[in-house]
Image (cartoon, rainbow, N blue to C red; front, top):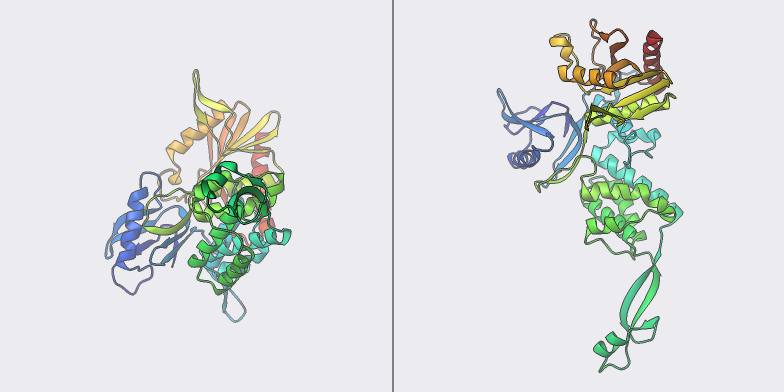
Length: 429
């Protein structure tokens, strides 16, 4: 089942979409209540004609309940339409295009397993989101296996019929007082059954139960054969703490990030409760910020993300200021931008721009002395024709910019945004 941001799930029997069984609805409702103090993944509300519903918020990703129901939540992006061929047949749906954009955004996240995803493989967007994530993990694991899995010397203690390694006198007396023909020994064995490989095998076995794709299940079976001599992890958090990614283990880094994502399930948006079997959810505010920041870096600008160099109060230094994007154009010119995953509308007061956001940007412009221009960057929905520029004081202006995520041509997408930032720079010169 696929939801867009702010669409809702309902359990009242009807012929409409987004209907789920009552038991599944109740499990999701408990999941929402367990996590309401930390994040609002779904909102419990009332809709006329439907009764109680669960409305998607600004978190996207996948939730799977224990009965096997899988719900995908995709970003709401304007101007997306089905792509059709000359015979008016759909070749790419709006949902697939939205999924494609989501993957592009995930690729920019720091310390995540998505950065190596090959965007040339976007035909995978026809797959359910969970199957895409599983496929991405398997692709990364395939690269690791081509380079070879690591073995290590593991210290073992055994009671053998022959002498091997070091005889442990105390244990020998205790264990073999009667059986003189045995030797209680300690020795090093060079084997692949090490903690990193156990975590990988545990992830493969976990995903084999989750996947509904014949292709993914076949690949998992093939990979499990490679790890046949490796055990499984019985203490996952403890084993992750034992992992040491030194230079020799660098090849394992991305694969283990995936393992952590699947086995712990809390790498990006922590959740609690045992009413869902699996959830991988992402805050669209953070995704949008990451995506815009990545664009600016790739366009050659001197960009600092989440800068922490200033405080709102100087004595004592408290209330850290943390602008999303700081752009150093030259020694005397600085641009500060904040991204907001929010749709503006001329029907709203001040077009929907939050007064708190304006205060926040004013504080940035005041505390960063070299700042001459401020940006608030929103996703493009429709053009706001008036009040796109606000003047705080003589040398400090705020410009509203719209970032269009629906561009087909990525190069054109970057070029368009670069022109906007350059134009604002010229206005301050």
